[in-house]
Length: 365
Image (cartoon, rainbow, N blue to C red; front, side):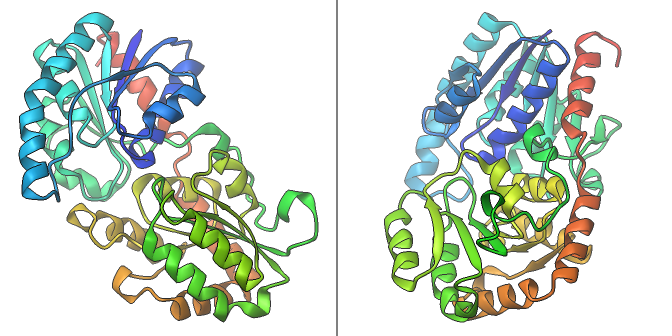
């Protein structure tokens, strides 16, 4: 079986595809091709992961200014031509769209060429690309039961959002001290997605003044994104906190293993990873996410008792610091939050989707 996986731009769209590719490899599939753009993180990440990447010329349309919207529309015919060339050259048995604007031209052209098509919808509220592609899909894999109502037809399947095996393999021990030492009773992991989040970076630095009683007890791991990296690293140093500050963290599975508490956005992949490894979290949804999908993702965890939620407009250092202090002071409460989070995780999602693709390619369904 030959599999083409289309999508990327951000880690939220790319990493479910990598998890799915690993599931295919576990089934003996070796002919796997990713399709993305030259601008996304896929060029760097896929090279490290050992997967080939074909590139198309395409750009997003939603939430753009007038000039960028016009440019994106003008690029669309080029992206469609690129997609046709890739499909005819690689000749996949099945095409998987993992969301985002990159998957649009590939899935649409796969329908034209009568290649089997599966799309993944990781958010509770579907994005515009997947809503448009839904009629062209043979199967639609969703991560939330509530998402089914946005699509019609028997092709919708509840699978969960694919998560990388190295994250799934993390056990549910919440109190693993950093690097196996007793130096820091608490480890906090802060990140705003693959590109960082300026508002979270600033709020976390301000929050240090409100958690100063933990200065000698807490180790903070902070993924900042490139623009804020130097300033945030200097702020930790000036305030006397021990921290590992990185623009981007590749060994995130190990960091999840160390974390007693996670502070992050509420993108679909982030939420799926947090649930898969059973960690308690403070979720800060991106306030301008399309259709408010991050807020919906976050509230699903909050309602289950698996996370605290701070909405973007309310975010400040004092509120964040007080929330951190309250949660870390209650170890039993954190343990319960972690268990509830883990109970929501769907750790077999990648294999389920791979099996669906295998049956489609074989003409069984």
